[in-house]
Length: 242
Image (tube, rainbow, N blue to C red; front, side, top):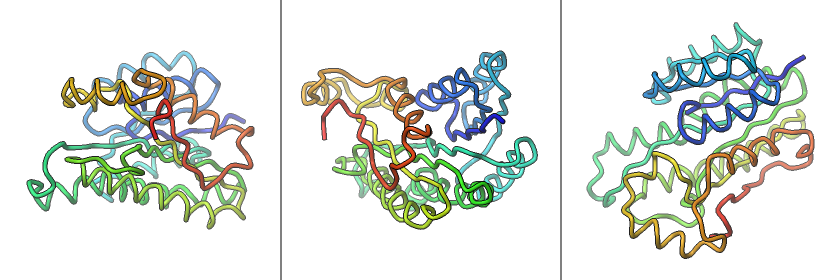
């Protein structure tokens, strides 16, 4: 029986690479999207030849959207065998310039939304005594980034969520891990100025930006049986930067 993978932010740069990897390896794929409607449609058309794919609109700032997404996943596939909490948003500016509503939105998308969706999909994994939860963090969650304080804080929270949930779900045969990307060539990093990009690349031992495929391969490994004795860990995929 085919396993089902759910990917939030599945229409973005990293999310779509993860979706392609799992689709071409024979999994059922669910992509959750919020702003990228057109991109989600393109990915679904592309991957239909490889897998049973479902796209779901879900604003992770809205708990009702999360519950509805979970209902659709359960109705179509029974539940999720693998959950990739990939959706993320960031803003670059001084911490004192953030509005309270902006702080709430960034924490909701990057941390709280992931927690709520995970909570709704855990029972299916527990019933099967098998599951994989993979959170997409960031190197900034480990070392912090000036002018990205809320994003860094949320990603640090995601790492703590990973470690704690891994201990809670281990007896049920479910692993929980975090992939922590470095500088990846995606639209999210387009607002970063050229000098900052060059500085990070110069500080990276492998001397390049990462690609979405680099992250997809790491996620696929952690979802596989080959990673069955790995849980509660944060895997840095950052070219050796941290």
